[in-house]
Length: 329
Image 1 (cartoon, rainbow, N blue to C red):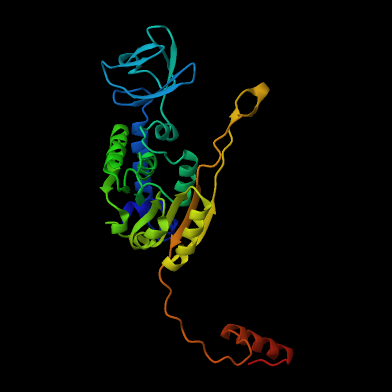
Image 2 (cartoon, rainbow, N blue to C red):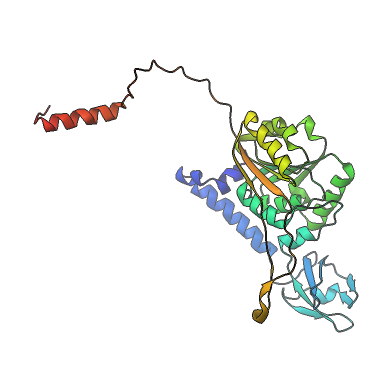
């Protein structure tokens, strides 16, 4: 197991006197994060450019380049050295705000050839499956790489994502998306049918985004460590039922099934109300834990018909009788 996985995420380690390792690992993570978040925009930064019409563009900034829009041209040299949150103007004098993109905006902004998993599912899944710095995780069904992006962002700088996709063109698209954002170094891309199994063993978590996940539970269990986290996204209830029938026989337990709904509101103080439309059903999430096989059963002792008291209970009972009778040993 990656040493930083246990250092960053095992509260048990604190009990057993590994506070120094925990502190050092967390301090290194904090320092690297602070280094990335300069208050001034630098060449190579990803910048969220937002116009007055609330249209957004995510652009990587380079000296001498320019960003073109229907509202005019923004020179990258205008942006370099500006404070985050500043406003700049195109050559047509149209204002744009410069913001650091959030993880949710990065996911929505990836080039896609397939439907991506929505951020509302991703956010819950990250907590439910205990994903963080140092986690080693397998993802199957890479698609356009939206989930892969989120996973890589969460496990960096010490963890790693192993993602599997059977279609070479989709894996190539996902890899380009991760490279453009600068997270490809935390991901290993495999082009393979997962029926052949996974190369990794003892990973912390595994997530499937495939049509018939129940066919691959043996391969999933072989890749997970004992107690590891399994997750799956499915669009229909009949798929969930089939998966549930197969989880127990493959040594998975502690199963949860859920659906997440988010309703956005118009942020107008005097006319606060929900938007007329919402993205309702996007998919069902199924979670489980990988369990070790049960040990052989111990034969039961002959039943005398009376429940046997534990030894400590029998001793206590005898002491009470001695006190009632005024006897002392």
